[in-house]
Image: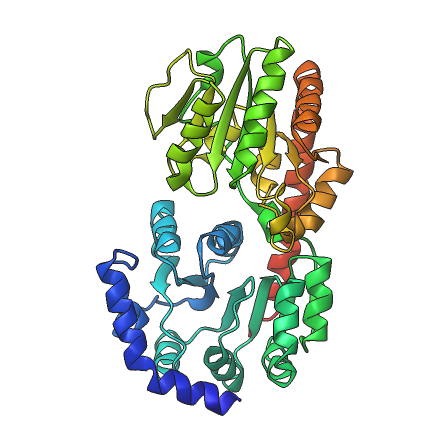
Length: 421
């Protein structure tokens, strides 16, 4: 099967090139750097440093490794980080971080075609390689292993759905997953699944996303100064059908005499006009807000229409509903990451369908930070209780989660550094 994969990737390489050029035409690839995926013509190499190569495919995985990158480069002056990604959004996120380019460089990952893989590894000569989440590229893994370069799967995530797919090609999974020298899983479920797929040296310290740094002092918008006498809450990463529950919750709170401002941040902001129409159907005054836009004081519902602003709104709220959790049709893929609002000191409410993050939610529920709701009646009652109590344990919750994140980061860093030659 490996031979077939290598043959297919080689013969399909011209097709891959055409696809990348087409995506570049559609502005889905970096206009200046898209050729990094199909050719190796890099001349940069760090001087007097050992290269640790970290590959994080898209924006979520990339954000999760920022604290680790900062720790490795701060504590070890001889380390240089080569950070690769595959998506345009991840590349843009890395660019915004303004990393010190003497310590870190970003490249788009070349296609998993053997001759490109060889040229890429020959150029960079990493002393250690880290793949994040569920990245399994056969040609890369085989070449790295053949060169006896230590290989790590970081924050490894193998859901039951993914596990069942790999089991269909069990001989291939045993071959590929056994190539990792160390697997640090993102959950107990993933730890069990990785072992069943043939991974060795599998450990679980906690989800690396708990290590994310949240600047709680920085706010681009201060809603509390605009809506002085109102309670403010937020529904984040909402999906179709969930907004209707949010509007009904808003109405129930108003009927109880509560002055309320509701923020809706849809998972896909291109739905903002659709949500605004639902608001009109409920006869509630809403406003679609873009970045740095003035907010009308007589609005009741704010519909966020900009990317990368969630934390700013979390810092204005004490209560958050996390979406993709109320619709039964999402039962196998439900749940959105609740760590960011938790690290902002918010209480978090969610529906019953959270399979993607069930262990994280279980941890937060044990700390009385997250709570399950089933409908607008349930949610409105929980919010009323929270508005009365004013989230008395805010600082305690933040400190506890940050301490847990630091433990995960320290243990992860120690394990990775132990593999250095």
